[in-house]
Image (cartoon, rainbow, N blue to C red; front, side, top):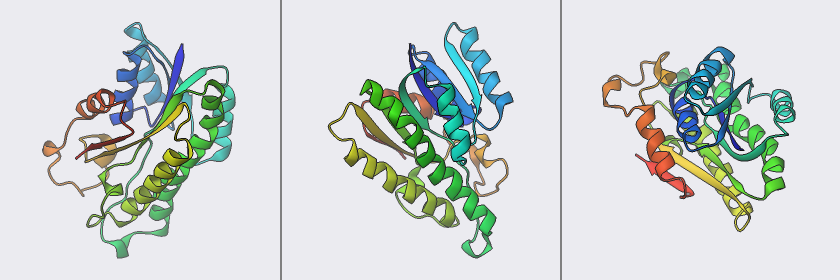
Length: 220
């Protein structure tokens, strides 16, 4: 069975993408920092006759990612969805070095680490895809999202360059740009005042899967 890795799969969009692709017949490799949350998603998938396994992974750490890749190297890897991400919001002058590093380490270096780890496995089959969940913050700057947008523009540059690098191969590189969703992402922030206007992660996941053949998916 072909496998798809989903990072940040314990909640929100990652969870819904994992369930959606499982329903399409893929084995889902759930990756994230909270094994408890991942195992809840795993149980939900397996209870419906689909297939998933969970791995505790810190995408910011090359060692953690390398260990994870060794654990799954017997899988027939078909896809990687880089969904894990963090955001700290507010006036630029108030952002701390710790907050800026957290966003760059997770949003940019986490994506780099996972891509470098997965590509050798994808190249063995010469087919499949990498999907980077970027957000519309990677398309244009936004007030009080300076550090987050900077990390997402960098993730966008990485993705667009990989699209050129693997153009014509059996591996497609996909960029997803979407607006805010009503997920736990916002629980520690008051940046979004009215979360009721945000789309549900399930609705966004369904749109992404519907447009899976496109290499640039914009849901604004």
